[in-house]
Length: 155
Image 1 (cartoon, one colour):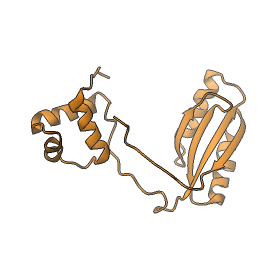
Image 2: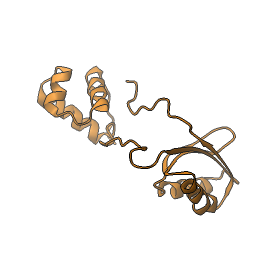
Image 3: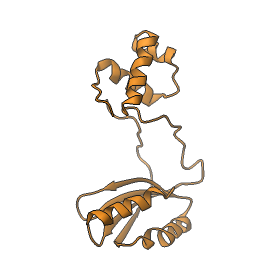
């Protein structure tokens, strides 16, 4: 990945795109008061350097029948490199796992899992998570209400 240094104009571009990735280059350039060609060049440079990883549609999980959010703490039997790699490779293939973090503290991993209901989460737990070799303990916490949710970084 090429080294890329961000300036104030780049940060303005990123801020606008985080809030509305569907902006056309014309709209974006007008919003940041930069002509179209340099604006597009900056966006393309940030895409090729990996600063802009991609563009997505944010979907309401309730609207698509996945209202249950579960935060799962997972502790492994051994914290050796191969065990960590195996766990990470495995969870990346599961569509229910929205986020997975390697943690410090009492648990090794924190997962955010979505499900249609408690029975679906139980199936995920029994059919997938408990079958991963090396898992020592699993602690599930169910979210009662989403208070805030952001995707835009505070730049």
